[in-house]
Length: 233
Image 1 (cartoon, rainbow, N blue to C red):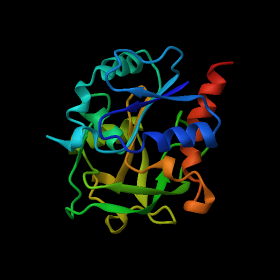
Image 2 (cartoon, rainbow, N blue to C red):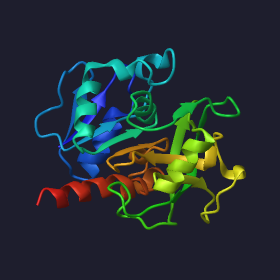
Image 3 (cartoon, rainbow, N blue to C red):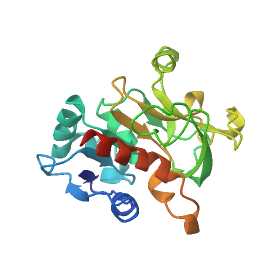
Image 4 (cartoon, rainbow, N blue to C red):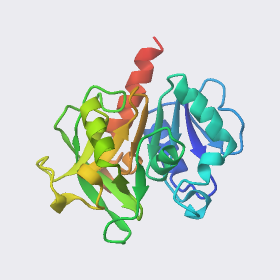
């Protein structure tokens, strides 16, 4: 069962549940942030986009102290899959579950658009339906989505293969010209060293229907469904 965490200010929680349950057919529930434990039978945790706690202090800074996050950390430490999208990515970074931080977009404007993303790895729980070098088209919508890491941290992420998505053009070419927010190294998604915690700024749950922009989000969300289905056999 996929547990979608609801914080005060989350606004993509139901979109995520719709994508997982109605499109992919996976058992999915909404989990309130004040719950002390994850629901019994949780096999993966999804932290959705939105504006948790109104983005006071810093995006995700207050959400890290919600009671449910202690349970999420225990779940991740035990090897359970955890995915954070947009604000969820910010929460995971603030919680120390992922390296780096998300800061204000370099142009100081909120950006809402479809972007091209190059898949850096096709051998993870979250990218198994893709191949390295494949380009996905998925929307972004954020004001504080510029991924930051020190040069030393970025080098370690590169060396360990922890970057799984990069902003690119439609041909997979990476450059500053196609970097929508100023993320270092055009980073759009990173994972922890163990490979069970993922964070990305683009919204795969908003790219699951052909009539409203495309279905490339199913490549990522479907990969996680596949991984858990295999693991349960």
